[in-house]
Length: 190
Image (tube, rainbow, N blue to C red; front, side, top):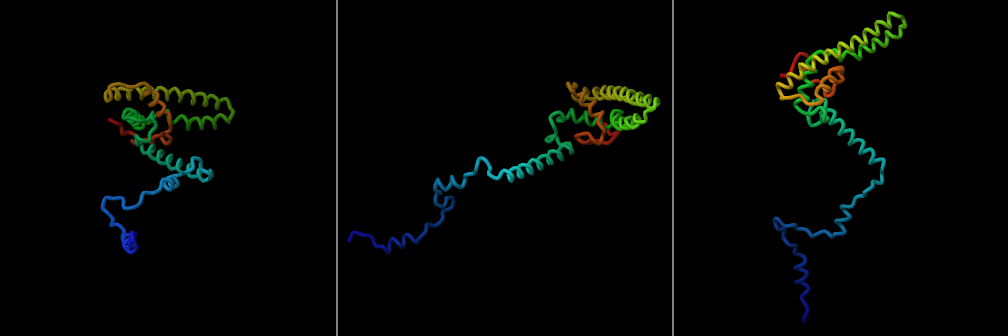
């Protein structure tokens, strides 16, 4: 007598509400379900797989950084190589023939001559080594003085460490310089 009609309740239950635009249109998930879905272990149980993934990620990052550095992209350069002043110094050094870049090949030749063991070989080694080092130092000094004038004209002043940077780059063989030379020999920067 005071009860509801069961047919009316069943009819209302079978009708799903129409989706409304802009509404969530789904039930809110239980907190327990959300926490279970977001739960990840702090310490990975499969250490070998984690080490492999980490190794691959580091290798890719290093390859990307190396490629950027080889191209001379400022974003990937170390702090000592960044900036327009350092780019200008690199280009000035790379645009000329430096005697210092021939020291390593000559030292290998001197090493071979020193195995001869004759007195004349010792004299040749002495003259080659110390003569080449002296000439390379004078060449590097003259190169720095010319480059310093250009730096002062372009940037206003030379900073501490610029001379060391230029001389160390001049003493490296051209193929082993990092970042790679961006200019050809004779193509001096302006």
